[in-house]
Each structure stands twice: as structure tokens, then as C-alpha cells.
Image (cartoon, rainbow, N blue to C red):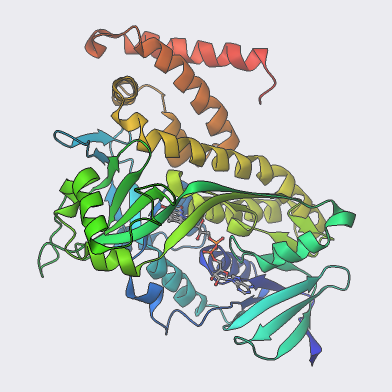
Length: 467
Ligand SMILES: Cc1cc2nc3c(=O)[nH]c(=O)nc-3n(C[C@H](O)[C@H](O)[C@H](O)COP(=O)(O)OP(=O)(O)OC[C@H]3O[C@@H](n4cnc5c(N)ncnc54)[C@H](O)[C@@H]3O)c2cc1C
């Protein structure tokens, strides 16, 4: 093993140059730190992204706030496609459009995951104090002696680096978190991993023509809800859509059973004929692309010995149904940045405050994301849900200070996720009960309704200790 090298006192090691790590690196460099980012994969500025597939994500206000922090908000308009609502494709009948909000201009943005990561890495080139090391996999961390072991290339030589502190943004399968677990007895490290029985598979709808026209509505997130499963589609620049099937692994229609072209055809003919009509590469995509797991990872503490801190998916990996994983990881950087404003170079305070402040929000968005799984695959087709949504849209259109649960999570970066969860769930409880008594939503006095919702929330909060 090569001798340990020492990273200078004002240097910080970031593990993982994914979405969170590269944005974090830029912010720390802007604050004057020497930043060393170690990434296990090859440099995506040179290598092909996602094996040639187009994988996109929904970027929303919390993520945009972090991009603004580092001066990269221009990528939203340049590389994103605004989505103003959901297009629901029922099993029978016409598709219906549900706006995300009654206020004009509130949208989420479909953006290429690899493209965004690449843009962030390109941005690092502006900072001479950012040093990137690719094909370097973190394999262990010694929290007492403040050093990290890396492997140079797959199966390559291992070496050790000493440093003052590391920020671990190495994703849901975090090696740093695994090393923290090995420290478990002394530090009482808690860890839970909850898989859904469902997994996901990425498929595609190609562009309508060479001019890059779209085959289905461009500015909407398409959902084909089918009770125990669903299909969604988000647009890409160039006219294609990334389609994701969320389905159980087991059972007669499960991923494991859909293993021949005939079975895939008959499954899509049965559940998703309107989508299938636009998926000429369906069978090849289905048989070639992997079916991947979906799960929630919670852990605590997020820091050990004020030497290493988990951020992004390494600290809180969530299921993708609120489109918030990356947004939450980006927001982590804003929270850390605020703490640096308040505490200067006092990293003991910064690490402690970060985990205390942020853990309830990580848990909240994890729980909200699971809620939304059930809402998207079933409730979007229920009449009660549709009536509630229509009422909420009317209140928002009327200019009232009302935000649906979705809007609180997605368009209110000034609110913590935990506050959005508490308020959003109370609003939903009230409105779902109220909707059972409403026959014509046009007869509703929205000003009064909004006041009643507020009063209900106030009473509920006074009665309980949920805040
Ligand atoms: C199907 C799906 C859809 C999603 N849709 C959305 C969405 O619409 N909106 C949204 O906000 N989020 C979405 N997400 C979540 C989002 O992808 C993640 O939350 C986000 O990528 C987290 O960023 P990160 O930087 O923490 O982790 P990652 O992006 O996973 O980056 C981790 C980096 O660390 C590197 N690394 C890993 N191990 C090591 C090691 N040992 N040593 C060195 N480097 C290492 C990896 O190569 C990678 O580059 C979705 C996720 C999935 C699975």
C-alpha cells in the first residue's frame, strides 16, 4: 500500500462527484476552500453518459435555489423543459390534464440527469481550487485516525489519504456510510433500508420525427395510473420521452415474469395500449434495460468525530415519487452554506447543526415520497381526489394564499420539508372530508373554505406536539 498523503488543513475531501458532490464542490470552492473530489466512475465529461440512454429528472424550486446559489440557474432554461401539470391517461377514456398549481408559471422542469451532472463538472473547471480525481473508489474510512482508503481503478492499487474532514456524497450505496456502520457499537449508528416490492424499468418514446417534434404533450408529466402499477413519461430536449414503468417484481404481471416479447406485448396491450402505440422500441428496451430496486434509506447520526458528514442520497435515499431526491440533495448544500455563514470555520458546530436541523426534513421527504407513490398510481383516478385537486386549483387561481401539499413541497423552498408534510397532510385530511359533501365545486365560497382550512390546521397544531 502506498504511503498516506496529507491533504492540507484548509482542504476538504468530497467523496462522489455526482449531482450533490459536484454542486457542493463548486460552493466550497467559491467560499475559498481547496476542494478535492474523488469519484469512482470515469470522467463523464469524456465518457458516454448512461450507456447512451436518456434519463431525466424533475428539477424544482429547491434544486433551482441551490443552482442559483452557485450561479448556474441558467441551466434550467437552457436544458430543462417546463412541466406545468400531470396528464393522466386512464385505463379507459380520454386523458385529462391536472395543473400542478392554480398560479401561473409554477412548473417543474424535466432535465437530463447526465447532462446536468456534466454541466456541473464543466463548471468546476472555472475554479483552480477544485481538484478532481476519477476512477478512485473510496473503500474504507478510519474515523479515529482521520484517513480514507481509496482504490485506484477497479481492482487497482490501494492508498490512504489523511485529511481534516470529508463530505460524503457517494450516493445511496455510500461506502462512507458503510464504514460508519462498522463503527456502529461505539457511535450507536442507526440504519434502515426499506425496499418497495415494486421496482422500475426505464423505457422510451422516441421523437415523432427528425425535427424533434413530440408524440404526446410536451409540457406535462404523463401518468398512466393502473392501481397496483403505473407508467410515467418525462420529455427530453430533442422530442423523446423517458418512460418509467413501476411494477411489482413478482406475480403473473411482475417484472420477473415478463421475459418474452409475446408477454411484453400482451402486458402493454392490456394495461398501456395508448403508450405502447408510441413505443416502437418497447420490446428491445424492455429486455435490454435493467429492472432496478426502489427503497428508502434512513440513518443517523450523519457525522462521526466531526471528521465525516453524509449528505445527499448517502444520508437520505428516497423513492422517486415526489421527484425530490436530487432537489433534497441540492437543498442540503444550501443548508450547509447557511450554517457556514452562521458558524464560520467552526466545523464542529456546522456538522452538529447540519444533522440536527436536516434529519427531520430527510425523514419527512422520505415519507412524503412513499405517500405520493400511492397517490400517483391510484388516487389520481379517484373522483374524490380529482374534486379535491380541482378545489385546490380554484383556491390557488383565486389568488388566495393557499398551497396544495404538492405545491408546499415543490414550490415553497422557504418551507422545510417537515413543515410541508405536517401542513400538507392536515390540509388533505380536511379537504378530503369536505369534498365528500360537495356536489358542485363552482358553488363553493373559496375565501371561506381557505379560512376553514387555516382554522383546522391551527386547532390541530395547538392540540398536538407535531411541530
Ligand atoms: C428512477 C429514479 C428517478 C428519480 N427521479 C428524480 C426526480 O425526478 N427528481 C429528483 O429530484 N430526484 C430524482 N431521483 C433521485 C436522484 O437521482 C438522487 O436523489 C440524486 O442523484 C442524489 O444525488 P447524490 O449526488 O446524493 O447521489 P448520486 O447522484 O448517486 O451520486 C453519487 C456519486 O458518488 C459516486 N460514488 C459512489 N460510490 C463511491 C465510492 N465508493 N467512491 C467514490 N465515489 C463513489 C457515484 O459514482 C456518483 O457519481 C430519482 C431517482 C431514481 C432512481
